[in-house]
Image (cartoon, rainbow, N blue to C red; front, side, top):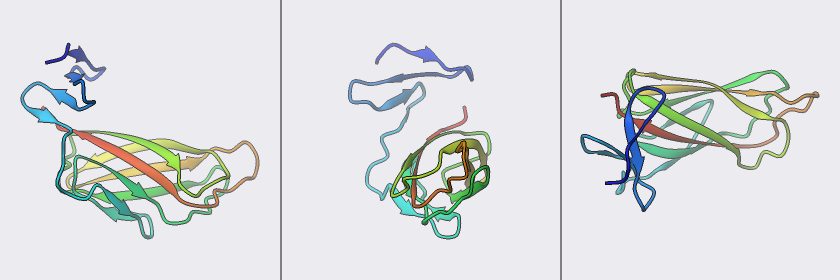
Length: 136
């Protein structure tokens, strides 16, 4: 097993040589055998995997406005850690910025703001990647 490190949340975890996240007690991010991508419609998507990518619908979120994505995921409980990153899909304008990630029973709410310095709205899709680390 690779050298374990402690997270800011007091959990021990490590990355194996193949890039799999390993947490003592048997948890691994290796979640193969199921679809790990989904598309959002009207700010909602369903994907019950430990990690995955959600492509948003085409967005026109104005400067300083927010987009809220609710991911229904039966593998998530409120005490889990859900790590999220965002990237442009077809979007070429604005500055999408992750504001908040709120896990709940069977879902996670992800809030993204357009923090662009001028009046530039988002103009396409975003790709939201997530990783669930189970509560101990």
